[in-house]
Amino acid sequence: MYSLAVLSVLAALSTAQQLNYADPTIPCGGDNPPCPADTYCVPDAADCAGDCLGVCVFRNTYQHCGGFTVEPNLCDSDDHHCVDDPRNPESCGMACDAPGICVDPNLKKCQCNKDCPEGLWCYAWDKGCTGKNCKKVCL
Image (cartoon, rainbow, N blue to C red):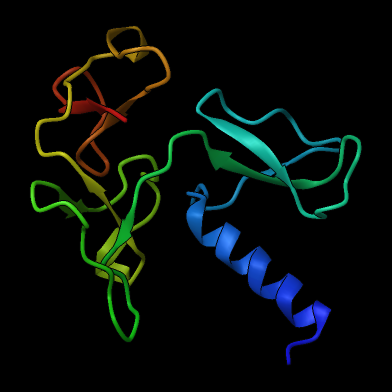
């Protein structure tokens, strides 16, 4: 039978895998600046009751796929594609064995956040692309 400590660790790991962390991680809480608008602060300690240290996590979660694992995850939906996460422009994505995210290939196009439905943000689709000629999508 598993000890309470082991079960707590397993529960924390399963919860962490459901969140989409910014890459590189963005610290928050304490004296750190607030998280960007498309993220929120998740405290490092589960029993935190105040302004505790933590990391910024994306508000919108997407199924993870690919990545360097024994059994890479595939997208659950046949009409979704596994892509590098455009919310992490500094990451080299699946080329560096990081997981991708599953997205609908018909994502809404945008030029800025106001073009996206409420709760979604505008991200450059192509890594390293800057300026008005970049393809951008709402996520």
